[in-house]
Image (tube, rainbow, N blue to C red):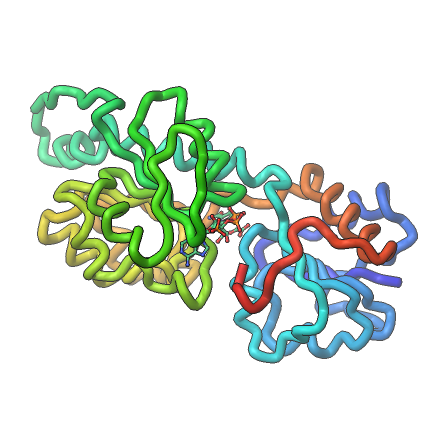
Length: 309
Ligand code: NAP
Ligand code: GLV
């Protein structure tokens, strides 16, 4: 029995070593050295080449190297009868929360305004806004969003949350569904996106929805580039409607050198690093899921393929 590793961004070596230590019974193969396809019972993948997974006839499960599975579901030839399993936290939530906390404090303390002033050699002081008068809107209240909300709460912000189905996190003013989106955005000054990318959430932040945000609002997108209409964001920043954006994810990654985001004075770009799976931390969950599949039990993080997350 073998597991096939495929990722163009993750180093396979720490995963190979962790498997050799914790599950030596399974051979660890790294694409393109697939070997005999009939041996491959598991695929551990990040954005696999479309069509690759259907060439593995004995697959028992597809294991995502991330929390999001949009890069796997994008494969039109994906074998849909094979269970698809994502990472559930596995060390990612702490990293996501750190990134989002950094961004929320950056915009709350108006660092985006002071960064512009520095470029213009300007010394202008703005009275700080108390955290209790600042609203942070969190889109997606799953594993990542709820971890962020818990870590944000002690800072005293007014926290709003948005999900598909109703949620009742303590201290969060909750909104859900299509009807909840407008009132949620209208009251959000710092928007933090933790949604999965699905048919329903693609371009959820389009020109119309960005216009619902209050003037001066800022956006932190650490979910997926496909959530945001990039041209609409540029227009909203350039018109002065939005104040700034911290972006970790993009329609095209790596972000092409000619992309206007790189040089925009109100956009802060990071290269999809908000969180990634560290083998040493995440391997135990992956191995536990393989053991569960072998025992015929339900794995943790089984994706509902029809729902898209
Ligand atoms: P999760 O536990 O599945 O949570 C998803 C949340 O989104 C749930 O609250 C869900 O609502 C909500 N949601 C789904 N569809 C919606 C819709 N149409 N309208 C409103 N809310 C909707 O996922 P997670 O583990 O928190 O991960 C979230 C995402 O973070 C991943 O999919 C990935 O894209 C992103 N991510 C990015 C990085 C990075 O490095 N940038 C790293 C890790 C993850 P319900 O509660 O009602 O189901
Ligand atoms: C990273 O983007 C993930 O989905 O884990």
